[in-house]
Length: 106
Image 1 (spheres, helix red, strand yellow):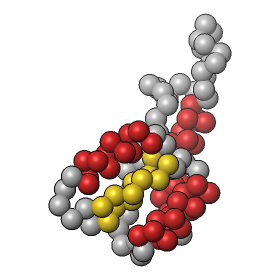
Image 2 (image 1 turned 90 degrees about the vertical axis):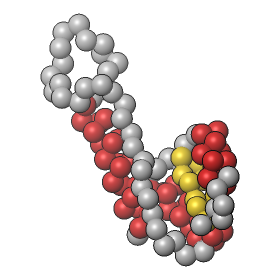
Image 3 (image 1 turned 120 degrees about the vertical axis):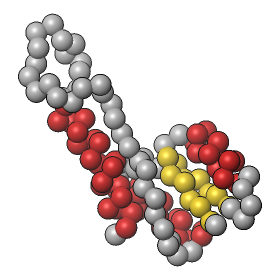
């Protein structure tokens, strides 16, 4: 198997790649990519195709979750004004979980 791994943290990518490479008949290339950034994903996909050839399977396990509670929709007096808008957090989750996958298969 020839595997390409995407992620934002090179150290964690390399750690996972070492585990994959320890398996028989597995090679693994790492690509530092923000999976919520469609331009980065498209560039990385082209690099994968150039290095490894045709892509036959994509396992998309990217996720982003930046807060404990997405439900509050109103500002509560006394809350930290630096808190992110739940709508923005939801957009980030969708960008990474769905947007990156769509970019990778286009």
